[in-house]
Image 1 (cartoon, rainbow, N blue to C red):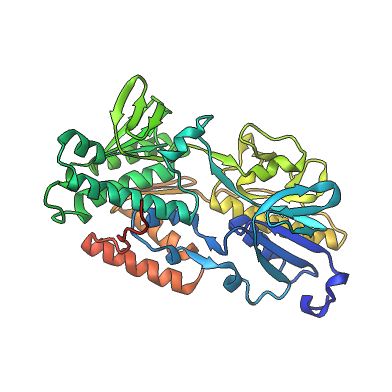
Image 2: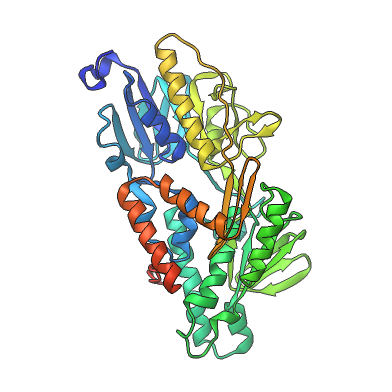
Length: 422
């Protein structure tokens, strides 16, 4: 097969990939040596390592530490063009991707990997008062909110209003919620120690709220219980079995009781990208596409769906919306497209579960890898090394490792700068 850059663009199929996350980027990379022309479309110019997004929100890392420009990542892949644009809709009958700037892209094969956004379960009015965490913009705005809460408390003479500023609630007991709660408790009790004159940051109330019976429901029950205990040792109040029923600018309702809290963070649910609705295929309750075993959209053989947007069951259980699954889907889609070009078929997608990891705080984490279960210090070291290894780019790995080493010895967080204005 001739090298991709030696073929006229008119002679090769055009593959459009929507989304530069794990699924989209791994699909593009998997087509590096294929005789195709690729256009990667993303509303941002960077690939984001989402598992560490909470570290940016809690001032442990800066935005460039966990992100890298897509053009830089793909600079050596001659058959791909990166297009920074927002997609408005997909027109399957005419094989068009419609852009918000009025442009369009004609495709032969489409890979839809646009990811997910926040889901407030029909209470979208809560978004203003309880922001979620999906993008770098979200992380930077949340960091501002968290740090400003301590500043507002320092300047507040009224004890009740000061207590509301020092009350933090994280809604949702999954990995993101657990990681945010544990880190925020550490900031209040260690990082900010002796820095304020009118308040004691250690008096901050950090509450993790999970409507289900336990936190980290995707982990075995014993590890879930270990996580709860580690959170409580850090000073986090863990509330389970009761849902938040209302959120406004002054606080939230837990059942019938109102709790004053000026900072509420949403980590309870996700909704699929609205682009799925433009495919003209049935969607599940979360707005995802129930894909075929080979990740094709139903009745749309030229469209593949991967990552958080794909709904697929395996052995009676849904494939989880986690980074390893998205990477595997991206690679599978690339193999499927290459096989199709060669007139071959490939086996259905098969997700390989390599386990779950969640950090809780300093020297505290839980790890579940098959029969291996770890918690505490060993789990924390395992989590740290795994995340450094999977970061994209040598610079990112070095910077993150140096920042974490500094934070470990000093309790200081390197990115505690408040930007923007009210």
